[in-house]
Image (cartoon, rainbow, N blue to C red; front, side, top):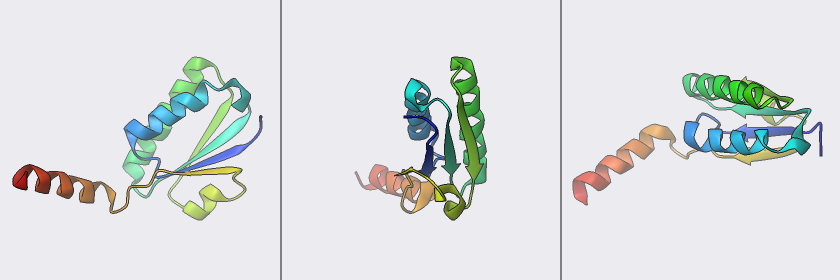
Length: 104
C-alpha cells in the first residue's frame, strides 16, 4: 500500500503518537504516504511534528508529515483516521491522577 493519507487526531501525546509514528516509519509499504497530525494543543503538536519529521528523515523513509489544529482539514481525503484524543484533555488527566494520589 502506498500513497495513502492517515490522520491522527490527538497527536499531541508525545508518548503514544511517537510510538505510532515510529511504527509507521518502519512500514516500508507506507513509503510515499502522508500523515496528518492534528491536536488542539499547538505546543504539543509542534513538538510531535518536529520529532516525527526528524525520525522519518533519520530512517530515510519517504513519509510526509503535516500538522494542523483543524480536525476537518486533517481528516479531509484521509484513507484512515486514528483517534487518540484524550477526553477532557491533559488537565483532566492530571486532576484525576492528583485525586487518586490524595484519596488513594
